[in-house]
Length: 84
Image (tube, rainbow, N blue to C red; front, side, top):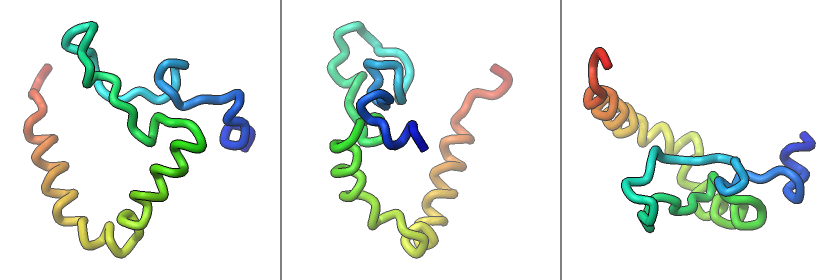
């Protein structure tokens, strides 16, 4: 896919309108608001950081984490406001 091969043209960086995570900054100078994540990085940073976490997310490990993932997802959903 052209999009995945042309890192010189297409960017995931938030400053170029790519992937953004989070909501609004509490203050304009909030130093923690735009913490970079590998999902919002371009190659080669993305690939280097992804290699570090990828082994943990293989099918067997995900199956072992399923209960914890479901519990945490349920907690997050239960904490959402109702009728808003």
